[in-house]
Image 1 (cartoon, one colour):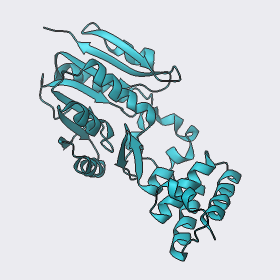
Image 2: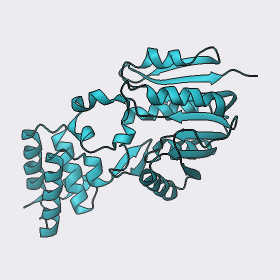
Image 3: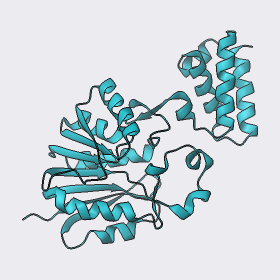
Length: 277
């Protein structure tokens, strides 16, 4: 079977199963089976697949048809122009989370000590360290996630420190210039309504906050008051429809509060500063 024929067959299987972007997915999976970039498929459409390549491609298609996200099959995801390794131990970095980084670069260029809470793959922490040169600490409650994050940091040359703890519990008072976080914010009752790729494959600890979905936000805002230096920034990625309630958590001790929408106009990032002494 040629690469062109394999692409057509894979695309047809994925399309019939209702998989999003079937052609692109087939290209990515076939390229992964070959150990080549997608451009190779179009430069060599008549090349015959070797048996081992066909076996790998068939397995990848089967996994995707069963709901496994493409990123967990290939083990990689691009974020802010860099390639990150991902495993089922970490949430897959989303393009909209890049807005957290963009907002941090916009409001906090002078921040010298940054903490990323719930680092997962390390996408935010690594990116901010490379873009700013600041001292960045990445925190996660999952040791397995921290192993993935640390590997990404080493591979991309980021000088990030990593620590296992529950949110900000191990951080000293008044020691941080900026806190950034894409926290869990899905209510437990919404589990069955999630896409199967998310519900069945991504780590629950990175998805679910509790019965209301606001439990982690509440704890982060409360402890940020202790950890931030006066004038320090708190940046939170917002869940859908969570803007009003999370913004209300920033009371009289905060100023310069702003909400940044994504390209679809959905409120995506909440930023606020601690009042100066």
